[in-house]
Length: 141
Image 1 (cartoon, one colour):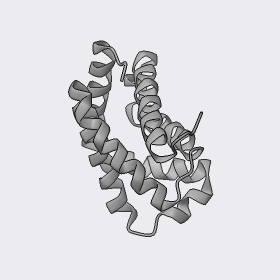
Image 2 (cartoon, one colour):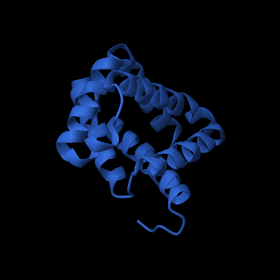
Image 3 (tube, rainbow, N blue to C red):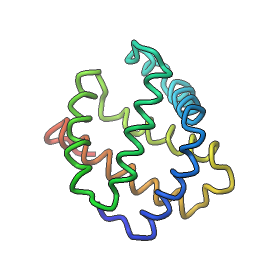
């Protein structure tokens, strides 16, 4: 992962601001995700509050692990395998990334600066690439 030290700091600092509103952020995320692609709602069978907690826990682990990315990659690969079982398609990663960025913008307001946004774009792009490469061998895109 080619994030600069500055980008890691921006991501970790901005996520620290999200943590106190984690439940609200998760609600915003899933609402936006389903607005962007209502078909994705069909993949979620359980309690959405519990799903939101899983999302925020996974993000917390990923963000905390940016100081030692080697520990994050195996977690991403396992997550990718589960997502294939749920029916996630490669194109769904774009929708998820857009929902994440819009959630951060709404949740952080002015604190989600252009520089912080770009750091999150780079992080998510890398996460999606690692997951798609593992889940869909030979996938280009």
